[in-house]
Image (cartoon, rainbow, N blue to C red; front, side, top):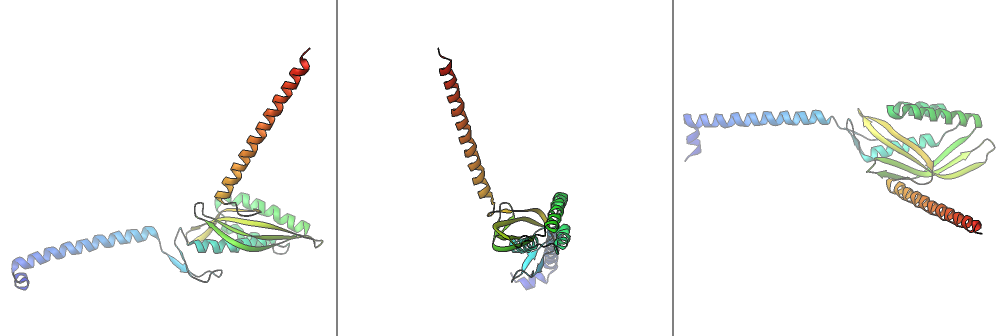
Length: 226
């Protein structure tokens, strides 16, 4: 059958119109689905943070790992390099980034530490060495060395880790977890190892106590014999 001749007939025209209606309806439905998906996902913004050489993507509620690591590095540098002169500025920068769930406690600790730094004329210096990211917990670890200098000029140097969980809320970074401690990163694997070691230590101590108590009972029994 000649398709061009068929479409020139009334029947062919009606059939062509029917196909066009279904095609247009399908396009409308697909556009609606794409629009709803785009609305639910939110806009993705591509930026180049000063700590990174390349681009990172940020959506309304998520970001690239590199962006979180860049913020963690910045925060570790900020918190790790404090003097009596800049302590109040550090607190002012940190406060707006804190999630409500940790805001009150973190501000309380910061306030106490700042008062101590000012009172004792102590200066902190942090030398970052490595950045680690833990996908299972979303934690970013900044490992390095912390140097504490007192008013007398004496310095104390220790390995130190800054630990953060940074989320994105309405395109803005929010700190949901913050901690720092002497030593290397307390990853989930390391925490599990420490927990097993502590449990093993407690079991060994319990066995020692049981042996000691058993020995004491035996000695008392021997002493009570005529």
